[in-house]
Length: 126
Image (tube, rainbow, N blue to C red; front, side, top):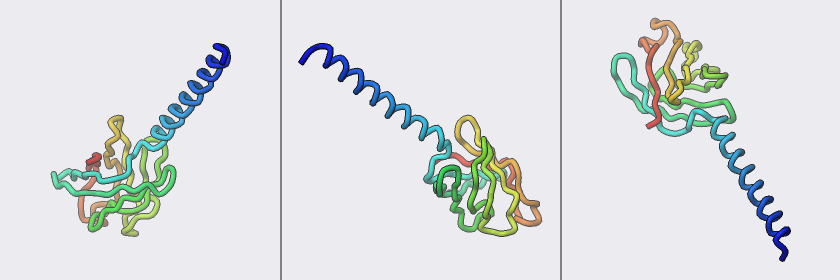
């Protein structure tokens, strides 16, 4: 085998490996909210476990039995807004995605609807 052939083969393999790494990084960047177990800390200090499920690109389900934040959400930019709440009265929930990939609740239904004040609650990956 000539050196020219080896060099060409090496360059092709290096190019393919680089493309695979770039694709993997792009996929990770496209999903800034990691599915799995998260902890929600309410403004009153209570901590609850919330399961985050990836439904499809940009859509997440927060499984939160007994908690008003449960439901289907859509990620747009750095906001995760509820589209289908488990509790139909909880239509206005919006979480802000922070630089450290935690979430902060920035908008909620009136406290008369939920029975709890939740704005400023945080979600962090367990």
